Image (cartoon, rainbow, N blue to C red; front, side, top):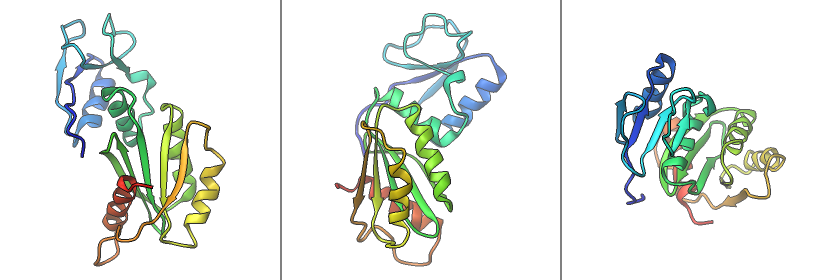
Length: 194
């Protein structure tokens, strides 16, 4: 886990939808934030979450209008903004249920379990639309599913992205099967050196 200090985040909006979404986006994260009235002073190096209409002269802004409204993707965008366009890594644990973990600078940002390779493709495409590059690590444990994932994702990889297969030995915790196991394995795959 990264020991880098996360700067303060300010929610600078009076818009109901934007305000609600920003609270939803920040809920469950370790990001310190403060809601202020647009135009109030913010600390140097902080990130201001606002709308284009209310932005004023805030320099490091993330606009409500630019977000996907998909909390998982938008958290990655937010952490990338806070950590200055740091490396985003997507760890994928193939199987009947696909575990997905996204880290930014080694910090877990979003995790989920999905059952459809097409949804995985959509998720990667949404991240690509907003990030300069993505490092995608696919575990090799399920010999029937991981080649399908590689084939599907190969079609959308840009020259700034990386798609690699990693050894997923010892990533899945022992015990009953479940989404938590898939997510934990995906997180270990994301953190694994390729």
